[in-house]
Image (cartoon, rainbow, N blue to C red; front, side, top):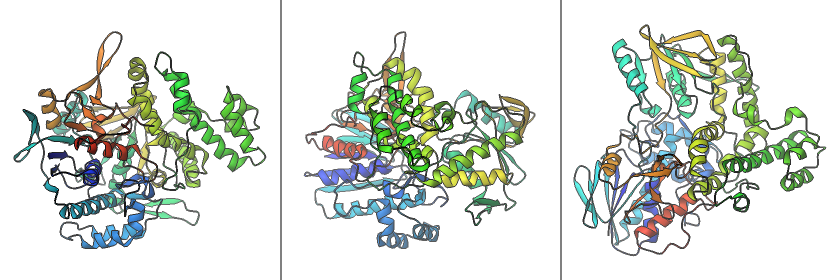
Length: 614
């Protein structure tokens, strides 16, 4: 059997591992990637200061119970990591010493540099190659730094078109982040920048962008306050020689190098993403759900559908339960925690339980304030707004520093990560009505989840606070607006339009959202043109709309109508939830289950438990 795996990132490696584990026949496997092992995100040659937002002990490429398995934390603690890094070619990897220094300073709950994850992926792949070399049934052909532009059907086989044509029986692809067609706004800004000799940076991986046109005299406008924002700020400050110094109280201050530009950053919300807490969890430890459970979901179904309001209420109650548990443990020793928990879990009106518990009114979990931390603030000028942002940053930093099992706010928001499979269950089983999915889930709910649970480690918030104090960064109030005028990029807040900032550079601080409808990836577009793949169609009362995901059978990640083609990961975002995650060890992670099931389907083995999540 001839198999093509397109994409050598974590999912491509997971699949290769499971094909090796499950195989009992002659296989010829072709592994393609337009970059290298690990793909674009996990390049080894990238700045060491660009870090992940998941702790080392919660990341693995090994199956649970697989012999000699290492999470990234296990690998860092062992001599395997240092030996492998020392074996790297210094000409190919000039950051070799940085990598060695990094692993020496990492703990099992550290948020690791993305470059270190890239080394782990490469080490893992070398293990797989070694296994294949001892297996007469498997032949592996590597096609790295090659782009697959098209896949065509030939009778019962596929022709994979890259630098050469390869005929295969089965194909699985997971392409990761892809290019999208430029929006009208992006086209307009790109043209304007060219005409006025300005710098305009489209959505892209921050480590791949050339920032040399930006100097210490530049004024930079950054649109977006999520993970990419943190990466760009790091590159424009610390990478340029600036230093963060910690005082005796643990507070950071920033010492300028003189090479930094002035940075103005904003977004619709006008506040950075919530930080990740210092992790206190064991590698296999999840917060259990008490409200968004399969039983409770089934109780709330109406005509087979879960009303969005019920879905959101159950999810929020799980977060609130965790918040009040941590808050009482921390600040209210006179309240009997066990009694409070039992009443909260069993009450038809948990809010009343909170009100009569003895907690102060200020301690009540306020969703409106959590989702909009600057609501109701009177904005008089940019300087005044920075004070509000700094106050909020100090609050969430202090909470995150307490730890993921201690800090009430950030610890409670950590619950959203442990509810991912519960959310995936709702989506993969099509339990929301199409109208609720399109009008409520896809818009504000998805945005809120990113804001609350997909931020950077708390060190990034501490650095941002220091940069604001140093006058390097200023955050715009909500509803950021950007135009091109007077040979500059101009930005302001719609809520405070009196203060206008002119910039020489505009950075779109985000990566492209995976969306089959607007993709500019040649492979996906050719597959669409040849009617091999298509977007999932969502039928509404008055119209049909296309989901962003490729239409697949969720039981086996098989492309609809193509029994020998499979896709997973970001190509299915919208049908699933948070499809870019690397699996966790010890928790029966469904990403690992999916890898096992896809491999068995490819090998024509029976699958006992199809991947339907939760």
